[in-house]
Image (cartoon, rainbow, N blue to C red; front, top):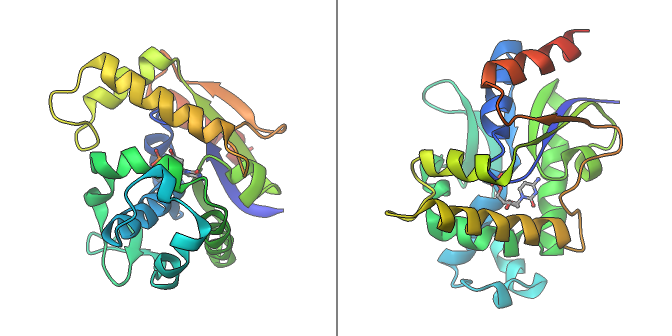
Length: 223
Ligand code: DC
């Protein structure tokens, strides 16, 4: 079994906050796989791939060939995604990236490239890995699996309250539409669609505090 705590769930479900607090509490690395898809999207856009129609294996071959990614401690001592020697950090939350990332995540070669990398991270000891397909595809043998959800209204409210990813002046309805579209693409794609693993514990975080969710997971892991 892989020594991995797999946390999956839809966009803006609160899983990143929960996963990073959990990793802090356990003092183990936290890998945000959404950021890896975002980093590929950023590199693709820099190479002129800017539409869903252009998201093909052929177009992504040179993009993937030029990408070196690793999780390393940044200057604050926190594990963070390094791309070609730099930490892109908040740049990955840009609205243009959020718009194209779901189409990019349907490309087979992108998914296999990232899956191999994600699996390699577990060679160095226990970690928390968060995404859409961690419990189903990347680590089907993870020791712990959680699927975090919240109602669409709650998720739109949470996303609107975050800085970075929203187009400035966006309304709750626009944010909700954007999330619904990401959910639609993520859960209907042919390869590794968003869905809970059969053996995942479902946690609906609507009305729960972050601390409540983290302590529920911690209790399970420590047991
Ligand atoms: O978690 P996030 O919103 O940063 O993820 C961005 C996109 O990346 C998401 O809409 C779909 C894709 N993704 C994926 O397909 N598989 C993962 N394990 C993580 C993210």
